[in-house]
Image (cartoon, rainbow, N blue to C red; front, side):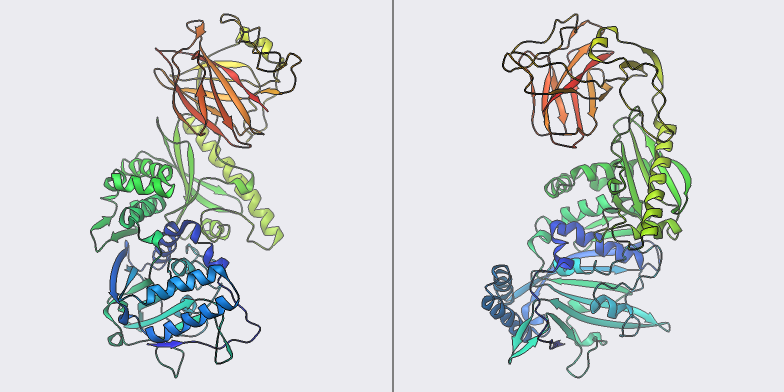
Length: 616
């Protein structure tokens, strides 16, 4: 292969910083897995698509054009030193070290049962767009997961040299054809007093800018023997190598559990030592090395959710509803109600998990009051539905959020924002239909009246809106209980203790000077449900500002405070139990939801949770 180093105008002064590449570095392993897998899934010509991820080491002289490429890297290093660019100097010194080794490592991600990338090697051709074009995509199918044309840069970000080779076998007129090229994205540099481009290509020969079409000219690692695309990442960064098998398994399960279950895609890792498909998927969730890799990557919770969904899918435990949302399209909503479910809504498209929040539309999808535990999946009704197109338009480049921020037309922005809010409302209706708690008994708590202003006959909330938890009630539910309260706190006085056990009329006094009033105390709404004989889950909505929160559970059936409190779990880092064992305190950040589980002594059939105080 020939190393093509195009000249550039003097006005081109390109440094190492590149948002289209660097954006993938913050979560590199997940980005590489998601981008490559979704691209393979998009190009299916037979299901399930087969995707292989392998590592290998080859002699450095098997890297095409190695001597010329070393000269390019040296030229970039000289330029970096002339500009005193510290990050660029570090990058190119490391690149030189990699190229001076006797062997070099490769991470290869290949697919089969796909169309590959072909067409004529001209503008808008699939292979040309993949290798040469910037910010342009060749995907015209409505179900394609990519739409920005920058996802291919995830592989480049994964290389310590920013060097990737693409090998594609495709069909033309019923006959197999082959393309191979390499691409490296570096910096501007100079040679013979000429400004040189930051893009370096590995092409067929010096006489024409074109891919290699004869596999016999290439080393074995660059060949492709079946239809599909192979991406070879040269000198993969450390994030793609440490504990790599378990890391890839965790990432793929977390993001593609729906596509795997639907038998749209399956994965082979480490030369088929790992085979993830519909039949084997559940076994990998329980592996200790996979859980450890997920914990290290900060996706252990996401992996756990994926396992819950996968188990429910395998057991046929989801209820299915089809809904239509005006200006958005048709969706399938799958809901499973059961103890221990995470109370989450997963938005999935083309088998890939996108997000569990609509926060950019003012709908975080985090609070679901008065519901049993559930998990819900919402996805376009079919892979080629109009709803798939509309969801894709709102995905960010990393495909892990929905937003209208990338849409230019203000009318379309307004229409889609309203449509997404309608989608959220319909999803909540389905949650209420299947997961609503039914109250068997309701009564007023006389001893708490003085803590709360009279609510009178409050009007019902408008349709589609959540109930405002300002009424002071305690409801005995089927195996569960809740207490919700909200009011202004009392005045702060000198250092003292809580009011008497049998009567709460004395209120709570906090530490401070005799004059008091320097720390404002506010009662916060909370929700609690019984999850076991002596265990309760308490949830607080997002608090408006940071502060310390204190909570006093009381077993109403005993008429005395609970003792021997134990914190089973808490969504916040700092939490303590008072020395007398009667209360729990924890610190909350601004606009952060709080969830914790408490365990009491004995069995408390109904527990009154005094509305927690927040000290600002």
